[in-house]
Length: 187
Length: 187
Image (cartoon, rainbow over all chains, first blue to last red; front, side):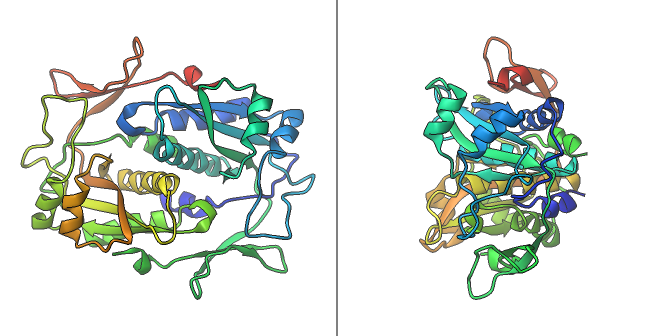
């Protein structure tokens, strides 16, 4: 059921770092993105796949983790992501690919969840540094980065109370995500 | 398998118009969107659901159909969508919700495909007219519209030849969508 996958597809930020992700697995996820709709079928998105320890360290350093958790600087050694998908846009073909990026991300992340993996999207990225690591031609813009791994945290969905949508962690390190009620989304 | 759903989730534009879509079905699709990630968990998206014949006619008139099919003005009577989801953004909360809209759309459309339905996203929308039909407060921007129904057309994925990504219809009214190869998406 798609609902089970969608519900299980949370933004995971702590992983079993000893569980690596193969190139073939990453390619299967990109195949899902390839088959996903793009506006006017333009297909301006490209993908850079990273799953080697040394490269992982470089990419990890470019990401801004969990804005609402002020006291948490990101996962510790042993709990870091084991792969990254950098979603690039060929700006010669399309200027504003954000809808397409969102569509592709959801396909990739649902595919990851089905494989027992999980991920987190990052818009907060040190793009300048990342460009340098990737030696990226200027025709390619960095849109979002997906960090992937085998999730090592529990995430629960709560109801929004008093309009507060900030996620938080309890004493047992369970991650809570407040979501608005269905009836509040309808106009 | 998510791959089957993703592959089957094409942009359908002709439907069995006698197959209606209930409110409950539409709400199940919005529940998928509700459980889908939004940047910083902001949740600025709202939804207007349309599935009554008279309203359907109004909304149909606001959509621009299939840009690459110059001789086709959209589905005829009997093949029109039977429901619409209008994705609205509360601009008091977020200014650029396009990533979130893409994520939500993919959840909604995969959910529709699982139910034997299918849909098409529209960015080409007469927003002024649509605002009037919806008597929409100015705090809500119209992002994309999803048209839904039980698909009445065959769509096949081809390889891109000579860089041509325009979809087209053959003599048998089969809709062809050229997609770039997996290896061409990797940088």
